[in-house]
Amino acid sequence: MQHEGPEQAAGPAGGGETPPPNAGSSNLLDEIGRVGRALRQLFGAQLALLAAELGLARSAVSWMLLAGLAATVAGVGLGLTLLGLIGVALAQWFGSWLWALATLAVLQLAFLLGAVWLFRRCMHWMSLPASRGQWRAIVRDTVHRADAKAQEHSTGEGDRP
Image 1 (cartoon, one colour):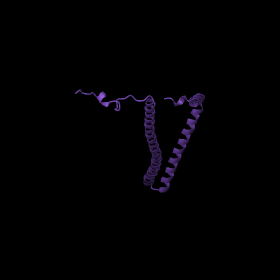
Image 2 (image 1 turned 30 degrees about the horizontal axis):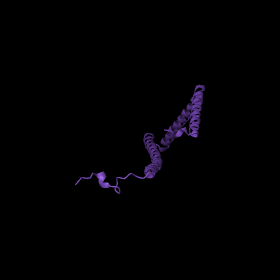
Image 3 (image 1 turned 90 degrees about the horizontal axis):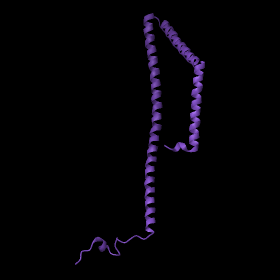
Image 4 (image 1 turned 135 degrees about the horizontal axis):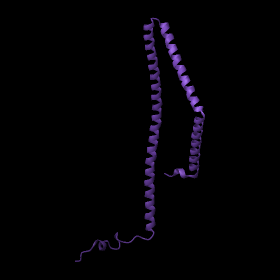
């Protein structure tokens, strides 16, 4: 009694026979199909993630705008409260609400005039010849960069990492 090895046990009808010549192309097509399904699944997951991130970004922008509005309302409320407290303190000091309100009006007018003066001063500094030259250079550089980026995207080089 002779012991048969696995290759002898398979015999001509077993799994040890060589595949027909066209089976290689079938296996290649199966592999390509599997790669395609894997890529579809991968990019599908990436697209789902991108959609979720864009949804979060839209939500974040809305919440940021709401937070900015709340901060503005709170700031205005605080400013009015402080003006009221200063008005009460001035009314106690002067003994008259009329003088307290007039003093507050003069203080607010002085603050407004100071802000207008500072704005005009900054505009003057920007209009000086050296500043104008710097502004011109900044604008020229920005336009040059934007043109280069547009040229890069139109030639397709912008898609590379």
